[in-house]
Image (cartoon, rainbow, N blue to C red; front, side, top):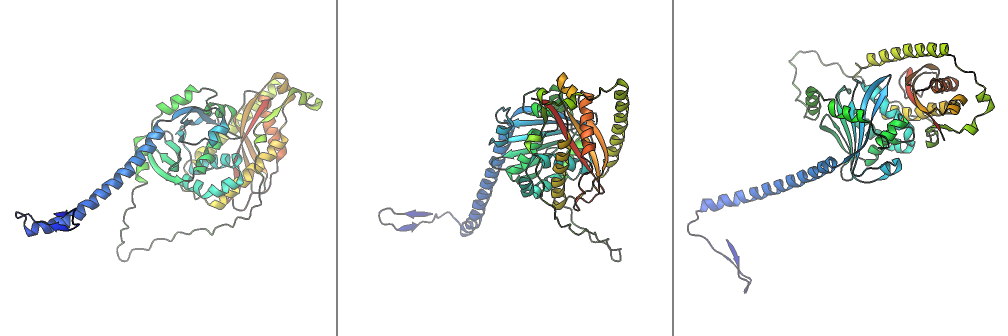
Length: 429
């Protein structure tokens, strides 16, 4: 024991007569160990409190709105946005600080390629090239984090935190964390940006309209426990490599294709002004108002054609659902980002609001899937989500056909056919 005399400043060491020498020696050895343990416990406590505070912050969020993304007549996923306070203004939602969360309940099976294209194309037409380029590598990391393509019942969460940045959970397992906050903003703009899936989808996510079906799907569709176990296994350390027996055939080396140099020209960004095709009754020309009225027989024939096209598209998508191993490069992501808004812009230039639709006050959103060949030729156009008015659907298809052919596919898009989803919103001012 050390005792200091406060009057003299001297230190006097006293020894208890009942202590044994070896006991004192053991105490000297054990005490630093105990101090180290205390330090480790303190660090664990700090980390636990930090994670708990983030989780608590996310659990206190309020559902701002929810919607359902549909394609080819089927519900593809239910979506919800959670914020600290309810907000209906998209600009304020994008810029507001604090915790945010996007939830996705998958309602149909996807392939990795289809899921990647769905997000990347929407990100491309709702964000500037500069912002996209800065976050391209992080976006690819986010998309590749899940080792399996999304299947029905999967639950995906994208989270934004002032302290933790952007993170992602897949069926309850955190696969990505500490990405820049801008990554979440890119994802959020696909729902509430200038060109959302539909205007009603955006309005429902912003809480301007209520969608009870979306809420029910988010709550009642259950994740397969095997999928939860699978997601948890992705973050386990890799198993040790077992040496092969002597004389065994060597493993075939994996051939990695040489990177493609990205020499794409700067493409113009799809502006917010083309988010919707708007017009007023006074802006309709006499030439438009003299358009021939579609007959009932023509509508019936076109409806049959659309049904056949829809069936073919569904078959193609189903056949691609088995595609599980897809490598995404930054060059390909940038090429997709440059080419997608270019095609969308050319189609928007050709859109004409039908005069009869203006007279009747018809509005709506038409979403098309178009396939462009390597040379830029229009291979096919399929309406994956119709408006309630056939004349608006026809106007969207006609504009697409008139806009073709499109520019040749960039070399970095390593495909002979490129599929693009184009939403067209007709809205009267």
